[in-house]
Image 1 (cartoon, rainbow, N blue to C red):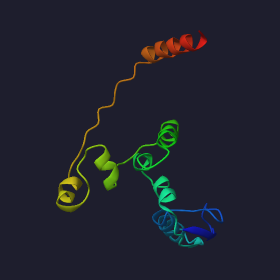
Image 2 (tube, rainbow, N blue to C red; image 1 turned 135 degrees about the vertical axis):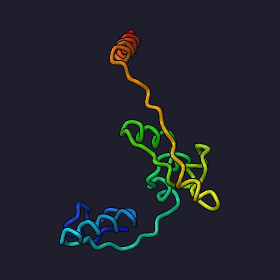
Image 3 (spheres, one colour; image 1 turned 90 degrees about the vertical axis):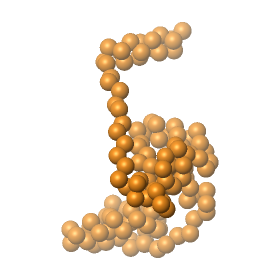
Length: 133
């Protein structure tokens, strides 16, 4: 969606926004008795659509892999694996078809590594030493 009138939202005129994000933001603004944004649908090419997806894993699989993954890492992004493509890429059950019911009731526990400040400090000093030489 291309923003024509931002209303009381934080959108900017001319900004391209995903349809679902646009609708979600407008619903919140309307609930607060604010003025919703006005927009028009836009047909974008496959490259722009792929790179503009919420999933950085899906975007990286299409084009500009290094840039997309670097931006995601630097920004600390998290991919919630909601689409088919990213689930196939990481080898998980896809959220569709006969697997959908199982997918919705599956809980995956992720182990967070324990970070020891002394170890991190030691690694930083090691890298700094290598960079200096």
